[in-house]
Length: 224
Image (cartoon, rainbow, N blue to C red; front, side):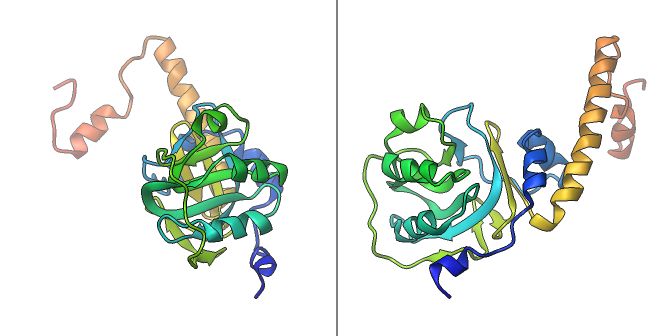
């Protein structure tokens, strides 16, 4: 299989991606069973950054970005390059040059379990980046890795074409085949939260589920 052929995998549909852009990562995580979120070490370079798009997974050896460059060369517009960098922060796996190339290729963003550099330029730019800290040291470019294959990033399984949603709260991965159901559940969750906000505005300050939860836990209720 050529590198170009490795990029020929099924992605979450453009229609679902557009719909997913309206949701917070937190809402999607809640309705997906409170799972699928990456470790909090993977954070946005700037709080306003947001990513919504299909995953293009990459696995690299710590401190080496050879396969990251290959992914950058063959990923398709909208793809989110998701790199298992083993949480290594001894050097940066990418900086301004790679981000400039990714933006020109109209990619959807980077989610990298490793460090970045050129921080001032990247944090003030328009290309969304989620990474683990910063380091001015550059990487090597000589070790093999895996491209567009299932991997784990930040403690979460990532398969080619899964939906990545990332915002200031963090990164959530929704398996491609579950996206439709999760988005439908998100609509119901948002409606329920709005109902609770309306109740609070009316002065109903105690959550209606609290006494039942206390009883289930074997604890006294508020009225006891």
